[in-house]
Length: 507
Image 1 (cartoon, one colour):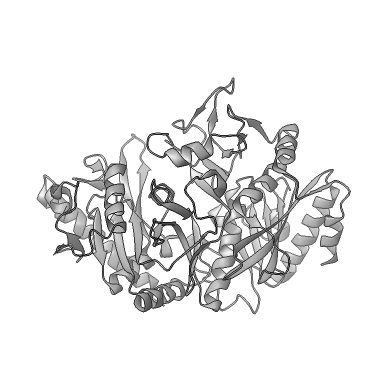
Image 2 (spheres, one colour):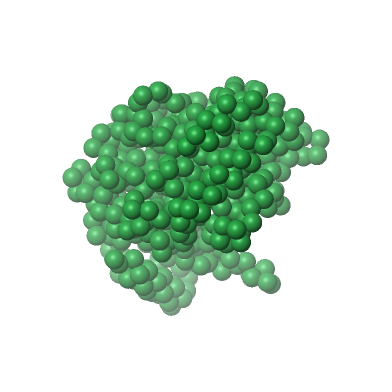
């Protein structure tokens, strides 16, 4: 579109500006403030998380029969998108200042996309410099544009949208439009969704996962929903971080999509997560929706008055132990992380190939829903492929790819419960991070390769009989419960919910 040429030639545009200039502009424009160590601290107002119901994909010959529309993806027709694009471009042209960055996502050796990002927000342009990789001319498989206009006032009646917030992607025009939300995660996840749609066609599995590498250059992949420990467990002492959230798996190995991290900060401390804490609390860290003291002398990561979804973004260079290339070998061990608040899954179990596919399709975890009287009870949460909101194709597409890799390379898949034992939430105890870390480390060191296993009667899982430094009484969930009848009732109920969910996932 010629309209984009008008944007890039805007008299007030800042092109690929240094982060110091973008931070200065963000402060001058009242987009944020400075933290005690020189962090850029942003508040996003109403939207402190993703607008899950406001995602749109334009219907075309590229998408009509390939998008998993039932997965809360709204349809937008091409004419509406063109009109919206024209209106947004005109809006951006009318602004005194614009911020443009040219970045990329993926791996140039396997698959990558060039990104042209236009925004009214200096802080958003700053965020893209951390989250995405440097642009290299002539090496990317394709190029996409993001038009970021969070303060544009959209009339839902004019465009037939659900609300004033819209995150819309047109694969034909190779453009994403983000309107009505300042939450930076929409920028990151819009490109992740695009990669998830495109990669299966070239035989690459996109993964909502963390990944790291041991001193022997062995790679490990961590699937998990937000809050299950994906970032925490992939950023571990003695191992090198490949990435904390978005990866691809090809016959060449695993590769990070991103150039930085976007870590949750609620209850972040130097004792439990030293690497993430250090990366989050230094000059030019990008902090979103965290509680800054009035005199800016401190940040309280345990204050959730703004949201529990506070975030920190920083480049991978802020992590000392990292794989600079962002690439690793084909993993021999994959971990599924589930925060089971029902307390009936073992802390670790080895899955067979069928179970590996089932639990991948389930993407199970559990969330805690507050009641009016302050009592919290667990609710089963399912997110196919451990990232359903970002997976634009049907889960069968991704699970088939994963199964092919597991079979071809004899990859072991482990289910890790980072949730509760000895009872459900409120009665039981959450697994301490040090226990989960120890289990992961022993698998990474190969110490469970020759373990003896016992079978779980309800979930049919293989549970190691013993693990060094782990009390054997908590390895089999039933043994850790005082009330056996209650355990059986809760466990059977969860197993039934698994069966019902898998039936829904069948194509």
